[in-house]
Picture (tube, rainbow over the protein chains, first blue to last red):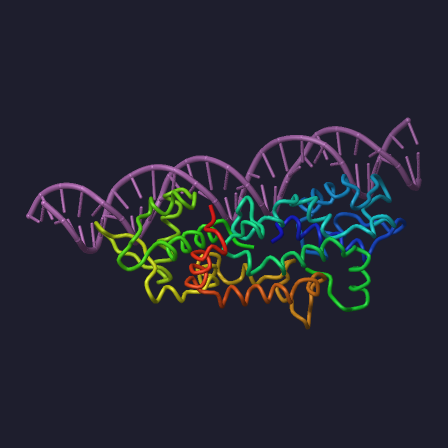
Length: 143
Length: 143
DNA sequence: AATAAAATATGATAAAAATCATATTTAAGA
DNA sequence: TCTTAAATATGATTTTTATCATATTTTATT
């Protein structure tokens, strides 16, 4: 469903949502270790997210990555789309160019409702919500 | 969700479910063309499926691939597992080793019910059912 | 028996994704 | 202003997945 890179992006972003703020920036090495992703790799991903203003960063000493007040409203789907693009998650199970109720692939009726629901949820769930969820112990920050 | 190979496997198998039988065998070239997959590639996939008795084949002149009476009861999940293995589809969105209600990843609550439902359906839907669905015009054989 | 038409087995190549490495830029602090 | 700690930009390498090619085996037909 997601590429590896997107999984890492979500992990890192959630880590920041829980552990950073404008005056508690986090350095790459300190993100890479707890989420168990190679430093150079996660660096590249975070840079891409930062460029798209989904997360924030400042250079130089005392710099690092963080989730700003604005970033808190970023939705999981935005992270996904920033890394994987929009087609991957929306493409049909069998990769028909056009698969919809008018021209459904043979698996369409088995999955489309549920899949649509999942996509909508990813589109409406913010980093802030998930951070609260994690902080309250209802789910765990993933390794 | 599925690898390319698995998508092709499903397409080819459904093609056979609709267009073959013990005495209407289909040759590789005649499968590759309509489902739009390179001949040598689909050959390899069909051979793997045949080895696991999910589809049937005979060598030599008048030979080819086909869906036997037994094969009609094969479930989509069996095709998927034969090519992708079982872990891919069952692994959690963020690839935690253990992600369940006791130790849920941060996205677990957003997807697990629907995902489980989809997996169950893939496990209970047979080639025969889908072939009927296609023949009755309710869905299309995918390109 | 010989021929030819098919799958099968095996491995080679190409493309994409994942991973790693490093030189450059920026900004804080001495 | 110099040094240093950080992100940024760029590109190289490795691994995985997808794709292609071909020699071998089997079996129906002549």
